Length: 421
Image (tube, rainbow, N blue to C red; front, side, top):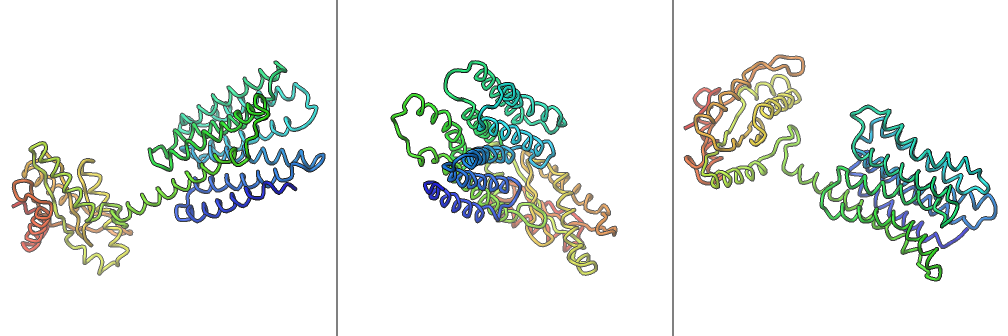
């Protein structure tokens, strides 16, 4: 056993531990596939520590260590697929991994017949194309076709090398370069494509990782006297690991921000985000010299639902109301849950008081339509207050307060009405 791989084994082991700690809150298939990929890298270093074994032991260690590199790249590619849980994505992973592993086994064995190597090289083009062609059209994202084209180019390069029978030994380098280059390209087209630190570090790390193999071969062929330390060639691995951890942290921060600004039950913006939306809507209205409206909505009869049928039924009512409002209102408008049974709406301008009142009346009528909740038919109403910018108030707080006051006035006057002035 070679002890020079031990530092890398320990380093990757610590990275896996850190990765698990960061990935646990996020969960999801992508993080599980990333973790499986890093476990393959640990297997790679473990296998390479036995390369010095004589005879078949060294050959097996070489095959396992090299194949583990490929498995890692293919797991990363799988995680970057837009539909990783679909059977087409799973089949593509297993099929392509099998082709690469088969070729690695053949290229590691002595005296393999040339026709067999030619057939194995052809599989790089045939298998991915067949799998993608057999999957339904809805499971053929652009990134998969890019992988098919690059693997076909790999097949042509290996076939050309097989028949030229001269030059450096490409059969061990090209597959590794291509599988990581495909991974880099697919990551560039993945859902992670945002100009964040995590994305940039991971993308550059994957690109550097793919280039390690041809650059290393070039040093061996053209600069054999130049000795480059193993830590230099392994640096891209750790760069990718850091980038992925950053991506997970960025995702968690984004999730925390969303939770801080949205209601957990309905998924609507909460009061904090609503006030921010009012301010921005008023700024846009000032720039266009237009008006904008705020609606304050209080559900009539909701307390009776909670008292009679329980809070679980009340929660379902709130969710249906949120869906009702979201479906009816425009995408540019904002609907928020600002209290227990209170909702608020920002109607983006230009809009008149008459138009805002008409929208409020329609929302009231929609709420008065009987709804099916927990096997029961229920009917609620709403008291709605309307306030206009700039006619009624000049600041977000005053506009919200005025809408609330008019809503409470509508409630005092019997409820189930719209109060616009």
